[in-house]
Length: 266
Image (tube, rainbow, N blue to C red; front, side, top):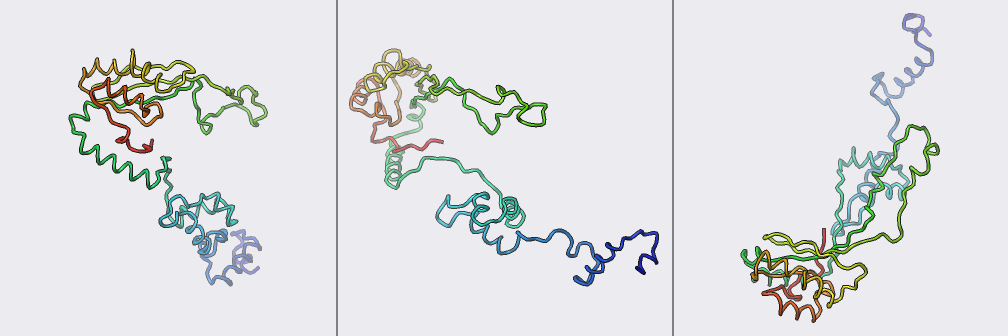
C-alpha cells in the first residue's frame, strides 16, 4: 500500500505488488527471468531419458525405434512434449527410411558368390555390350498421394463444400498393360507390348517377347550379333525351354546360376 502511495503515477495494482513480493520471498530476486513462465512439467530429466531410450534403435537392432506418437501413447507424455524433447533437449534430426528387399543370409551368400563370378567374367568391353531386360505393368489409373491431394474452397467448414469435389472415384479393377524393354550402353529397344490377358509362360515369352518382332530383333539391329543378354529371375525366364532358346539364338547370355539371388529393388 505504501508503494502505491509513494509512486501514484505508476498506477500499480495491489495484486501486482503482492505477486512481486511473493516472488521475492520465494526466489530472492525480482528478476523477471527468474522463475518466470510456465513450469517445465514434461521436459524433465526423467522424461528426457525415457524418450532418448525409445526414440533411437537398439544397438545392433535397426528398426526397433518408436515414433513420437508411439512414445506418447506408451509413456503418457504428450506428443508435442515428445517432439520438443527430441528437438530441443536431444538435438536429434529425422531421416526418412528407404524400403528395400529383405535378404536372408543364404541370399546374401548367393549374391556374393554370383557377383564374384561375374566380376571375373565381365570386362569393361563386355559390360558395354550387355543388354539388360525387364518387364513392367502400367495401370491406366494414375496413382496419387493422398497427403497432397487437397481441395481449396472459400468456405469456413467442410460440410459447405460440394460432395463431388471431395470424393474421388476409384475403379476396383483398373485397366493395365505390361511392356518389356531392353537397355544397354548402345541404346534401348522399342517397347514390346504384351497381349492383354496373356499368360506369360515360357512359350509366350520366347515367341512374342524375345522372338519374332520382340527384343532380340531390335538388339541385333543395334548391336549386330555381338552382344550379351541379361534378364531377371522370373519363372518364365529361368525355365529349361527359355534357357535352351537363348542358347540357340543369342551369342552369349548370363545363365540363371549367375543371376544375383533376390535382387533388391530401390
